[in-house]
Picture 1: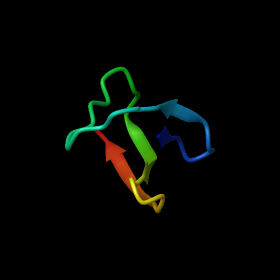
Picture 2 (picture 1 turned 60 degrees about the vertical axis):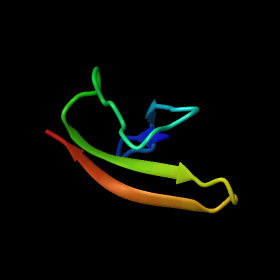
Picture 3 (picture 1 turned 135 degrees about the vertical axis):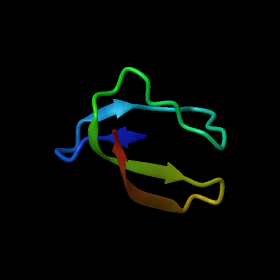
Length: 49
């Protein structure tokens, strides 16, 4: 799931690969939240130029 800094979901990916295509998403900072197969959750900031 990709959210903007205010928490609005801008993209959801059901079966992610090793790359994430952010075409159609405006430039800016986003928070990428990954839910792993074991149920753990990882979040990281990313910037689209």
